[in-house]
Length: 466
Length: 76
Picture 1 (cartoon, chains in turn brown, red):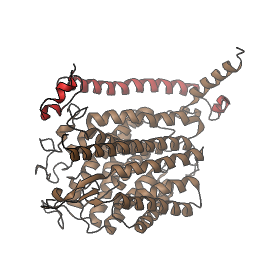
Picture 2: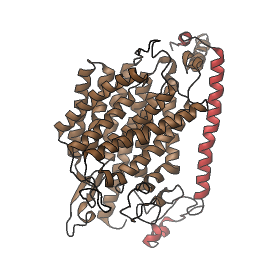
Picture 3: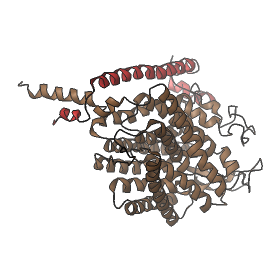
Picture 4: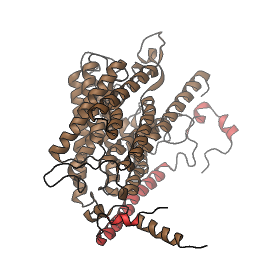
């Protein structure tokens, strides 16, 4: 870096993404608190440990292959040619944003004085990966083995969400070009896919012992520590600020980027390199949070668990278009998402005997799915990308945002890349006898021996006189 | 192993030589490190799965009742 302005821009961007990573760490802290608060006393420590261990597992695999997948797969492959090299194959050539640079043996995947961005950008995406895996973690508490969860966390955190990000988030993604897919803050790319994945697992895993009566009526196994759940959700809200910021490019000169000669226009952009502002998304983040809380309070009749979760669901539902919505639109969309997610949760629970312990499929999956569909109508006609915008895919231009494309996109996120892989992998683990803990352990409590040892320690200390 | 032994000499090189990897073993050790990374990752699953199975089987054999854990609650 020898030019002052260039150095300042680079170091600002490096620091910007680094700060988002720190903020997003709070999402994981929040998920851990939330899950422990929602689990029963006899399972607390294993619940916490399971969610903690996804951090190293997803991080290591994200380094080894997850990040490479994101850069290699935007073309499908085979569905739409890249705007970088005009090939529909995997992007592994010499082009600037090729996956070639992100194999784990690349010298850009380490301390390199020629690259100040890759590591922080890698980490920002990694924190999205943790979030995806952590969404799944809450749904399956108190009966999944740590081994099975580790495999499933890697599958969603380092493979399937990465594929969907390559398809629907990457500036060269085929879903943008063909479908006009738009998902600025990841209603589908993170939330619908993780919610769908969790639902696929739950269909195989089965409910906790005691969740349903012999006649099939659901019993409530409510949160054991509502205060911990509350603080956990507030931390997730806090971390979401970092999540939103990480989905933006903080400063970009769109004039030369769009090929407009002699035009200079510096702005923040979304991940699709179309303009937005931190100011605008701040309006929308808070208004969609508010819409979710308002709707959640009313529909759950003031139930604290659902009201706090609904704040999150409100943000998630509006996230697909929160780069462009009016704040009142964001609020209303958040409210609609919450009502649908809440109703769907109880309908699916009764109809299919699905025990989603923390409502993760509803808050993330259903709200995200609905958010994508609504975005297709409200943002109908907007460009899905800053590059070569046309009316519909003709091989050289990007499709505009449209309801049909967004609906197909929602199906791909929730079912094709979410529920289906979750179901298949869970089936395989179940077939190996590795998915679920033994019935006797579930009844006794996963923490039984830890608690017993703690009691023995306490006894020996209490009887000591010196 | 050291890629840089003198920072002043290093930064005085042409810009294209300065802008590069500076970790130990740059350009020669990456393949081996990644293989080691894969072995550690897979190995962890194998060891952790074995430990977990043993623990679960041992606890399952004791057949504790659903409320037995309450006798283990400590009061600090």
